[in-house]
Length: 592
Image 1 (cartoon, rainbow, N blue to C red):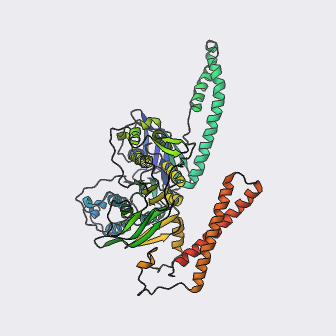
Image 2: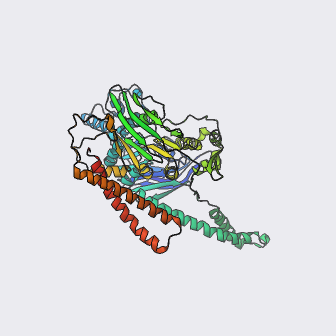
Image 3: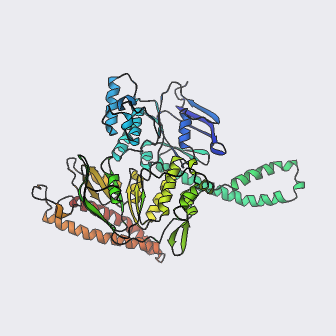
């Protein structure tokens, strides 16, 4: 077979389950060295397509052709292992090749799997997924097929995996919802939509731009077809007996025109904005909380006073205490010392990693209606259970399906709807992006941006965090928690400017609890104190000006000249704010 033959060539592939057609007559290829990302909505066949490509699932029609003699490695969403075999034995069967064993240990260490003799049955689901990932990387196949490779990885692991896949000439086809990962790793995007596959030769940012162009063109085509359809429909209804054989081509054209005209482009016309969520000025105060499991310290005398309407992100490596922190806040895990003092008006909505156990025989709509028939949006407006499900892309047909028919991602989406249907004023979301498709993530981001209450998000999805949060708690391990006023990208930019030898210090610990007797760290000079105070006032003034400009631009009463001047001022203002905030942050690291 010729060297330039694609590693994978898929021709005219079709797959259905009964009356449900997943894809019909799709064709695509993956060339040597290409990094290809596959994007689709939950339930439309992403994982089924990968299973077909690796021979684990049959198909109705078409051809799947691999280049002769290439080795294919597959990472499944839910890998299965012998519970009695060790981690090292589960990774490969190389009869103890010393070089492979060394590589295995290096990769497993990067993925935070350190006990190589531990039986697989003692590992959590997330740890088993990481062992499976290590396995497929260690065996060095010619062609990697990865199903959600970033699930169960913390931020450090994700960034390591990005670098690993970017190096060399690896050939890769993967499904992932991690948009930063797609942007940095993939050079081709395949979109499975409406039973068809579309190819975009660029990264995720390029895909977004070209996808919108495709939708706009499709919308224009449907509009043109509708205009012509009305004319042709009149002709079809007029004197059908007068139409002879010569007009048969026009009839055929009419039915094709009718097919195009009746197409629908799925779009949501409104943003879901609730005006009936009230939360008081007191949210919660974390009062010198400590928590440890044996010698593993998660929090040590940690103090934090949560602000009204705050949207906070919590990041950190696995095992540093992120999920435990929110479970203590919710009263699900006891503290060792200290307490959480929670305001009387706070009503939590908790989306957990573990999810919710559904009655498999219930219909989707009934699951949500069992919680409430509607959400009171204020001003006499109601948002029904049906509308909420439709907002999160459950079609009317899917709403009347039974739960057992849902895919894993659709179940997570249904669980999210049950949390929101309770109309909480404080959302606590623990890894909400796992298993959700990109379109659903965009809808959730939009919802949270408009949410008028408080939000805490624990997530490894950097793109999602940047869209939602304005504040971070960074769990650095051994009870150290850094309080950072910004989103994840801003934190990484700040972190890159810090000296490598800087020892992280716990932030926001109240002065009354601090012991300065043996503290030899540098104190802030008088000049630095003056600068810090001045910056604090200037930042407040700039933020107030920014808010005033944004409100004026949205007010609808501003003249064209004023809009032009304000539009020029805003980016200058933002740059000034960023510069002063960065310096303020540097000074805040020094003890006063």
